[in-house]
Image (cartoon, rainbow, N blue to C red; front, side, top):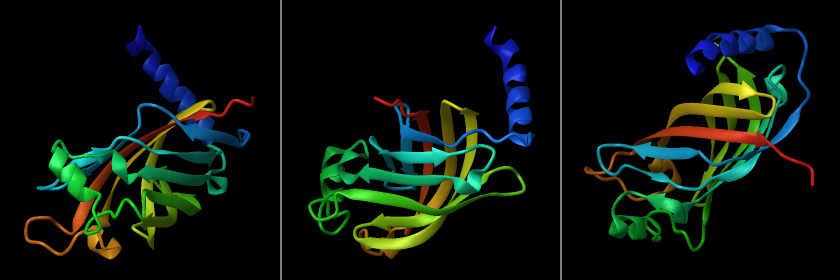
Length: 183
């Protein structure tokens, strides 16, 4: 039954994304099911929490905004000692800089229909401009943004140059958001 509905859903999304009727701007919040993983030969792991607000309009993505926060103390490498070390002054310096932050400055859509979210990534008190690609799925009440990008940890003074830990970390994320309900 679910497989039979997929072509209909995809066709509906295609029509909605190419129509000239613009959906109203919505305010969304990050929901359960999110994932932020970092991958390298060593270390690899994930952050288990992310919060924030997203404004997204499928018909006009340039009006979108992303304001996200990841608590560094939610790092999970699968090794408790490594998790504790990641919070020290040498690495994320959690006492002084408890969050990784991303705030968008512009959003565009490329020729493949993928969003290019440009903004300021702030880690350990240092901000750098990054463009984060995002594939979008969903509808007016729920969207999911997914993508992969690389962060050079040395740019943010996270650890020191090392032969064992690569400078560039691959980041793979999935960010589900749901429309905020007025209370």
